[in-house]
Length: 343
Ligand code: UDP
Image (cartoon, rainbow, N blue to C red):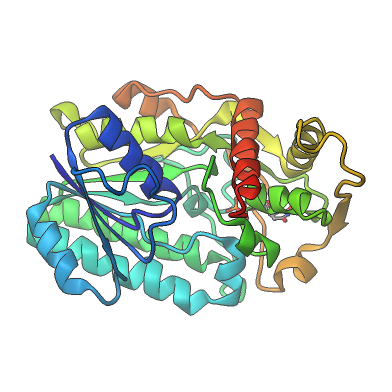
C-alpha cells in the first residue's frame, strides 16, 4: 500500500510514519515544511519525503494523490491561541487548502482519511459526545475561537456529501486531546501559544508560572498518541471496508481530567524527576481570566468527553494508556529533548 501523508512532520504524521514503517511493508510519501520530527524515519527506503508547502507545491501533491492508495491530509493549525490571533490563516489553511485535497481525492477516486476534531462538538452538553447524534454547538461569530471548529465541521459535511453523491471513500477521525512526545515545540510554548500540556511543561522547564485559565475547572480527555495511532492503523487497513463512510471519536474517556488537576500532576511529576528533584525553585500555579490570557474572542469548552462505543464496536479499538503514564511519557520526552539542547 502507498500512503500519502501531508503534514508528515507534525505530531500525528511523524508518529504514524514511524508506526507504518515499523509494522508494515507499506510505502509512505510525505510532504512538510521541515523534517525535524522525522529522525529515525528519514533514510528508510520506504519513506519518500519532500520539503514543501501544500499551498505551493500543488503539482507534487496532485501527482502523488494519483499515485497513492490512501491520503491523509494532516496539515492544519490546531492551537486555540492561533484561532484568535489569525482566524483567516486558520480558514485558508485548514479549510481552503484541504478542500482542494478533498476534491482531488474525489477526482482520482482515492480513499481519504480526514482529521476532523473533537472541537466540532463545541459546547455540546452531552455527557459523552456521539459521532452520529450529538449536536455541534458553537458560539457567536465575534468569538473567533470557533473558526477552526466551523471550518472542520464544514469540511466534514462536504466530505460526507462527496461520499453520498460521488462515492468518495472516506473516514473522518476526531482526536480528543492527543498527547505524547513531539506534541508541540517548547519554543512556541515559550511565547504562550501552545496546547495546554506543552504549555505547562514549558512553564515547568523555564520556571514560569503555570496559568490556569479561569481557574482550570474545565476538563479534557487526554489520549496517548500510541493509542490514537493504533486506531488510525486499523482505519488505514480498513479490512472489509469497515471504516468507510464512518466518523470515529478517538479519545480516552477514562483519562478525563480538569486542567487544574493536570497542572498539579505535571508539577508533582516534574518535582520528583531525577533531573529536577533538587531544583532551587519551581513554577507556581496561578489563575488568569480567559479574556486577558487569550483575548476577548475566546470562549472555552468546559467538558469534552468522547463516547468511544463506535470505535470499540466497529474497529475493535480501545485506548490502553492511562493518564499518569501518558503524562509521564510526554514529560520525559520533552525533558530529554531539553537535555539534548533542542528545547
Ligand atoms: N489552558 C490553560 N492554560 C494554558 C493553556 C490552556 O488553562 O496555559 C486551558 C484552556 O483554556 C482550555 C484547556 O486548557 O480549557 C485546553 O486547551 P488547549 O489549548 O490544549 O486546547 P483545546 O483542548 O481547548 O482545544
